[in-house]
Length: 234
Image 1 (spheres, rainbow, N blue to C red):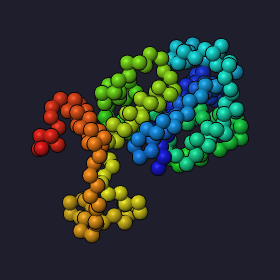
Image 2: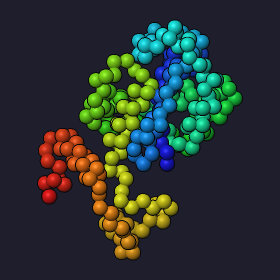
Image 3: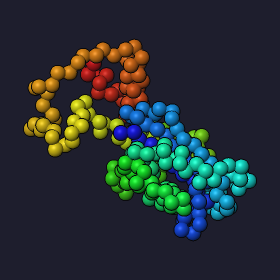
Image 4: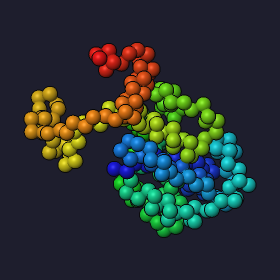
């Protein structure tokens, strides 16, 4: 499934009080690869940001006045997000704001545009219970550099979250994928699918792929502080 890592910046905390979206950043991921087909838009909200929100994102009313309103970009946004899994950190916040923006235009909610909405904050809390799990902490936990993040920015935060999500879900994707679902998957006493009737082609890695493999092992060595098992056994 096509996946979109999404983040917004807003004028405040509550669209029910008239707060609006001022920035949208989206990063496309297909087959766990960043495609570069990203979406980044600033919006004129026709109101000032609260002092607290302005301190977070730094997007002044003078700067935003020169950009389109959400209604001018809504169709393009909906088309870009259509049918994708949307991945958001603290999804209820961004989803509520985007649903409010779409509702003002009589358009479907984000929940109806997307195939699925995944909350990485929920994922992080399940994996690291009782610990802080904001984006900066997760970047530090997964050794992802965010030193260039002085102010919050929707596209920058989406790019960082994409790296965090890839790191958090590494290892969840196996060699054999049964598209028919778990109900039709052949089970064995080891919990692995049987390979008795499976013919796997042997495709040798190219030089760039071998180099990418070595780079990945280097990253594992750095993260663990020791030689990874693959190299130790070799």
